[in-house]
Image: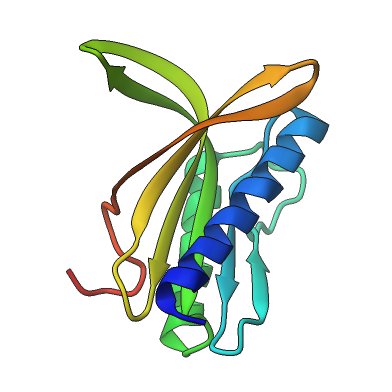
Length: 145
C-alpha cells in the first residue's frame, strides 16, 4: 500500500469509527488507529491507572500520543491517525463560525501528513457528515519537517 493509500485508509476508518461512536453515545473519546508495514491495524486508546478518574482530555491525548510515539520508535507503526471530538472554528466568506468536528491528524513514516476536520451535524439522532477541511499538520508523529 502506498503512503497516500495508507493515509486515506486510516483517515476514512477513523472518521467512520468516530461517527459511529457519536451515533451511539453523542460523543467519542480520543483514539488512534495505526497500521504496520503489513497493513495490520492497531487501535490505541488512553491508558489510565484509575478507571474511576474523571475524563481529562489533555491526559488522555498525552497517553495516546505517548503510546503512538513508542510504537513508532520500536518500528511497529508506518502510518497513524489520531482522532478527537472538537469544536472547530472555520471562516467562510469572511465570516467565522464554530461547528463540532472530528479532527484527525494523519501522518506516515515516508510522507508528511495532514490535519483533517470532518464537520457533522446531529439529525434524527444520527451524525451526518458535512464538509472535510484539510490543513498542514502542526506537529508530525514521525519527525521530519
